[in-house]
Length: 251
Length: 175
Image (tube, each protein chain N blue to C red):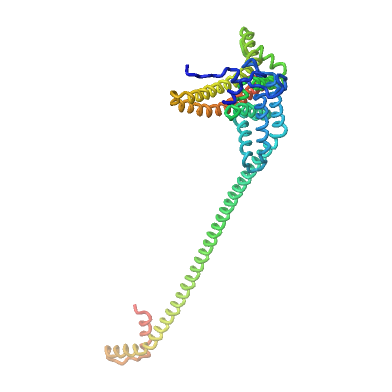
């Protein structure tokens, strides 16, 4: 009606390969962003000096490490959780850098708006917290999950089934879908307002609406930067909470 | 946005917008595995070491400050003790000096009193002696006058030598 040409969902999230066609090692934009989400934090850490009085990149790196320590590890697990700091820090950095490419020009795509990286991270998180449960409690971890002793006998089969599904299926599924859906929704929002701005620019009569649409686009871009950080934090924090629930099942 | 709109090519584009492509899983897993291993074994340990060193340095400085503070408090206490000792010593010295001064004063007063008493005694004895001398020197004249007066009264001549013992007795014991 207004000449609005909204791209199909394939154009929003599907990216052609740069090389390799459909081989398992083929590279597209998502693969490239994944590699950059690995390379950029690595470069940050490598460029950071190791001085007693921090300057430049060292400030940023130490702030991130301290943030993970004080806002994720200690509140969720406690001091004994510090052995998981490398994993939680890696998850936070990988998710954040995978997300933030949504607002970086020429990329404009969060890697986590595709299901691959959220699924991988959720499987790793599930593997770790289930592994921690078996490591510290042995078979009792599985037994307490599917046959919880704190529940009345009549309810144990039902609660056990719910617990089993929660721990082994729903938690990792929810971790992956939460990240994927949030980033995909943000990506679609930005595309919507971007397309709207382009369309309004072409329509002489409606160009007066363009400032509102453009303002929304700018505001949403800022909001998506916040969401990129928030989703990385939430993913790392939930992983820590699940690890803690495996360390201390009674809680 | 332009890059999105430009992605119209269909070759290699995943068919399902939700299910991930194998190569996306592959590169995602590779990238995360490399990042985790690097952070776990290469990147994080030196950063944590520097942070721990800094924390240890700050803690050591704080401990040193606490120790210096405690030492200062101890020195203050020691100084206060010393001051109290000095004050007590000064008070005892002052008290001793006061005692000595009092004793000296008493001694001087006593000596002065003794000297005054001695001088008074000397003066009294001198006065008595002079009085005695005066009386002795006057006694013959008084005897002459008394005898003369008595001779006139009784109208006969009385010898001074006879009357002298009576006159002396009267002079010595006027009552």
